[in-house]
Amino acid sequence: MMIETFIEELNYILDGGFRQGDSIVVKFPSTFYDGMITFALMGKNTYNVLITFKEGWNTIEQKLRRYRVPYKIDLVIDAFSKSNKIDYQDDRVIFIDSPSLLNDISYEYNSVLSKLESPVFLNILTIDSGLEKNEINSFSKFLEVMLSRTVVRGVFMVSGEKDIMKNRNFTMEITVDKDEHILRSKQMLSEIFFKTEPVFKIL
Figure (cartoon, one colour):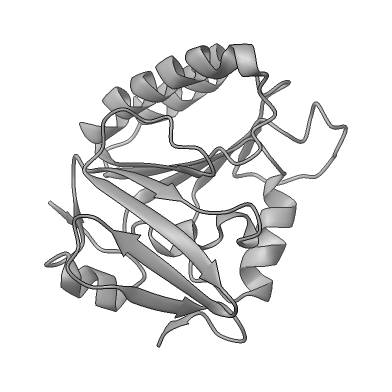
């Protein structure tokens, strides 16, 4: 099954989009709009889930609108706001008490998956996740569990500054050079150039 993204040129390069069962790592520097580009890489017609460790969905959504990044989010697991005493309401959001409660995150995600019939696209934003150094191994195992649960149902994507994913189909690296943001993939023959202001588009 093909999973179309919001970027038509990328779908063309991928012969229609990502395939069900794909796993993707997107690496980007901390200055790069907090990974906003990963939302345009998500599925157009999938059930899209975001897990965020750095900031609440309310501020992420504001950035997406400001940079006019195309996206579709059906569920957010917010492991940042509650522990940082940030309060907001959104029917799409499940709040987790602490970013270190990986079992709680996994349980909530699995309970949602068990009720779904449509393909799922999971995007985990890990940049500045707030986890301690001694929790990296636990987080790596958490990613493996989330990957195994996701790829049988759709597409798995993890993004951030550090690459701690062992298994993947695609590795994409975003580098910043002045106003141009270059998305490179070892599996792709082409380079795709993005500018995020004033309109998110392919140059």
